[in-house]
Length: 182
Image 1: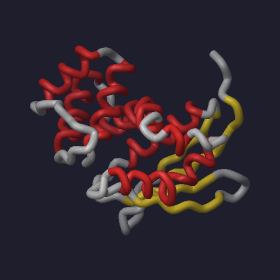
Image 2: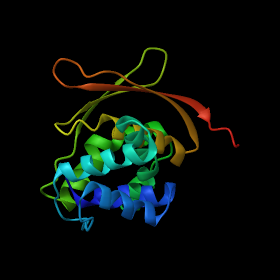
Image 3: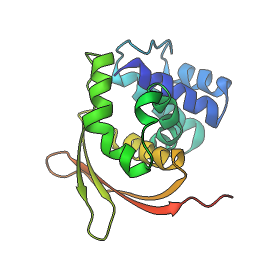
């Protein structure tokens, strides 16, 4: 896994909590926590950090991944501001992930192995995203989808379905319009 994912996870944890919490998670996970954005690291490091977070928060692994993904989206998007800056809606950005954003990621990180996405329209409106990755980080992908909605001020209804027999996970996304200001 590319270090940029660890960097965005670190920034998300610090945003959600603080730097001490990140350091505590690294200690509990037994990982060194020094991740260069261009480096490649063991997937097991992220799993260990998530396990440490579940013990520290009482949340499930999926809940941790969704929360981190939601906050990490802006940190990832800010790394390619010219690309995502052209988007005007959540659907537009989500539709660019596979054929545009991941193509650019591969130019920056030739050994990256991003997940594969497919797209179809939902009857009655909305977007169905097919997610496929040997890493099985569909909860992180769900969180990133929520983060896209946050970025565009759109309230999204997101439904993540169980994996199919061939390992594909479908994520249904319906825009409910502008998010209410609380």
